[in-house]
Amino acid sequence: MSGTFAPISDRYSPELRQLILSLLNLEPCKRPQLDEIMAEALCVRPLLNLYTDVGSVRMRRPEKSWTAVPSVAQSRAGGVTVAARVRGCRTGPPRPSLPPALSSTYTWGSGIPRPLRLPMLNTEVVQVSTGRTQKAGVTKSGRLVMWEPPPFGMAGGPSLPGATEQLQPQFVCRFLEGQSGVTIKHVACGDLFTACLTDRGIVLTFGSGSSGCLGHGAFPKIVEALLGYEITQAACGASHALALSSEGEVFAWGRGDNGRLGLGNQESHNSPQLVALPSGYEAQKVLCGIDASMILTSNHQILACGSNRYNKLCQDRIVSQGEPLPAADQVEEVLTFSPACSAPLSQEVIVGADIGTAHSAAINASGQCYTIGSNQHGQLGPVSCRASRAPYLVEGLQATRVTLVGCGDAFTLAVGADGEVYTWGKSARGRLGRKEEEPRSPRPVQLEEAPPSLVVSVSCCHGTTLLTAKRE
Image: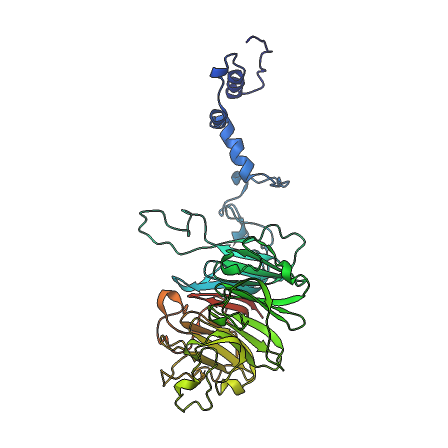
């Protein structure tokens, strides 16, 4: 190979001229490879600037040199020291402080002993949901935000092999990609899958499609079987889901064990199935537990199906709380949505509820909190009769008007109208988010926001709590 080229101008640095000459070498084997070029000191700085300075705006105001700033001794005029002229300080009006966050989202449990404030851009989160592996929220502007652990080896992420120091868990926040033109108004998380609801009543699901819980196989996409309905709310259990339409219709799909789909059998379905409700009842809200489902009706009653272990669904026929319950009146599972049969909860006007692993909680119109189910770890509260299967009015919250409740695997959470958050039950691995004193009694959780603050959404799953609040 032969060829000639003009001499390289002296206007370029010696390093750049040498690099160009090596690239023009007549022998191909002597020309540097791409990785060798990028490793040159001449190229390293521009490569770094590509990631750090791209998109930056050049400052137009010239910076003053340090020598131009008078010292404290030179700044005395008439016996008055101008403290603002000390080295490095601004001399103009005070810089405005950052505006307070529009909302704050916290998590605890699963090894996090105290409420951990999650990172968030300057936007307001109005609803949250947590599953076994994911934490999600919906912003006021209709975007879906996810909180995830940092990549392996980064601060707050999974520890490197052999590491002895355990760092405080941290999370990074990201918005769902590819959401242009789509407004999300509700999100629900299962164990390994997530369902989103748009402002047009369309349901989108993604994650693991085991047991048909995505409603269409194993691919993230729109649940096409529901396109003919305007869906207003969705709920996810461990491996099943419910959807509620604007006409009060309820659809169920996913795993069918224990009759949790309310279809009269225990079969699983990978597409939404219309659920038949008892005559005279209209669904207003749907809830999912690990192995059960619940509906709050327009007349403020409870309908439930699935596993009734420990009578967590109020399906035992209890007339009076003090009377012993015959074995014939104990119900272990219900295959169709059925009204609550356990007094006094069956006679109350119910405005809110949640289902845990082995217990549940409900709020009546007066703001009183009832719990029912297993009390193995004190998740019902300080109950005198440990083996009772009857609903129990939680002691310690009589002076508090409860507005929200959440049930985990062995703990309970209640939010008062004054903004206080109370937890009780099993305290292991930070489930209660507070000191382990009197774990069986409702005690407040200390958030960074001091009351008055408004807790707008709370979600409990397994041993984790996710909560979002805003300043009133």
